[in-house]
Amino acid sequence: MLTMTLENVLTAVENKVLTITVNRPDKLNALNAKTIEELHETLIEAENDKEIRAIILTGSGAKSFVAGADIAEFANFNIEQGKSLSATGHFKLFNFIENYSKPIIAAVNGFALGGGLELAMACHMRVASDNAKMGLPETSLGVIPGYGGTQRLAQLVGKGKAFEMITTADMINAQDAYKWGLVNYVVTPEELLTKCKEIAAKITSRSPVAVKTAIKVINAGFNNKYNGYDVEIEEFGKMFGTADFKEGVKAFLEKRKPSFNGN
Image: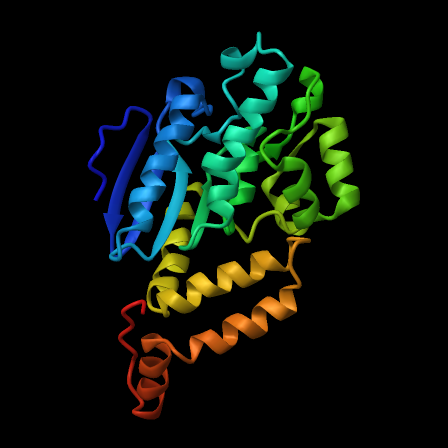
């Protein structure tokens, strides 16, 4: 697993779960082009590794998950460079994560601001430490969120709260994030990775092909190109042709735990 040399990303695999850590603590793990590229490459390798069933994404240290994009990197960009920055980020990381075939859990430790919150929102689930602070402060810099934040925040917390958070640029705490549906759980910093691993362990015991299909179908309901119900009917039918379905039903009837192979 993971043959390339990485400068800003750490990886560890345990019990079929890959933990990816953004490792730029001196920059509060801010996203720059190199980090986005390394995350993209890591996820491509992980997608092709059948031994990996779930992923936890976090930031190094206790202060920050990802404290935003690296502003110094694009401070002098023009209009076309700005559009390219956003489009490349969408393609290589944020949309890529949202449509990834294996569940990705964001372990939000500390600050998740701007591109950091956008990264967490692109993940399929979010668990936050009780000292986490989240926000999209872009309007205070004269820009707007450019990595999907305007869309995913409204999907998660509703249109009104999204308008408030983006136009005021205010941060919220973990408890409010939980109350508004932005995160699934709030735990102590010491319990953060344990909780994420607990969720991931349940996922790794389920059918990989069913989990992959569930991600696809849930996402279809939030994509105006598709009718989510129609996609569900189609994909539900396909499941009956899989080895995992046959194994799951056989195991149920034989009153034993299934052994899924992802086919």
